[in-house]
Length: 151
Image 1: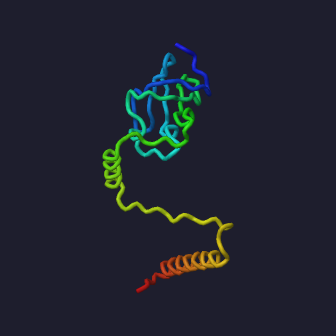
Image 2: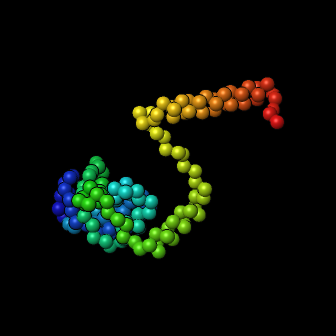
Image 3: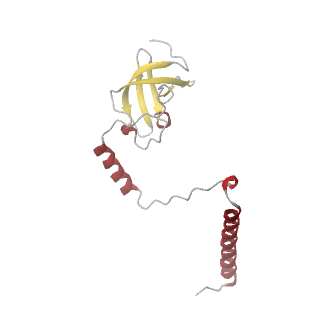
């Protein structure tokens, strides 16, 4: 069994896939885990879109803790910064349908424009909107304290 070194790249084989990562057997060096965040430079929702069991992969050792557990990275071991998922479109569509069922009507906030990129009119409109929202909140809380209701 070889001694693993942090920062070195090794060949390995995916042995087990979990929802938070994949366990990889390193040739002659034991087993390590690739966390879901270390699989690809793109967002990984489903690990099986990127990896399959018994798949040969290149991994970089990014850490070894005091208990001897080895942390690995696939994205840091590959030269191509944007690896593509290896599954076919039918499986991807099934995953999307499953995701849509599991979290229907997900609201995402509008992306904020940094103040340095906003025009003066945009800043005034944002200030006006914030002021109106605060005034409404203040009016609501005052009405509640006084026991009155709006019709």
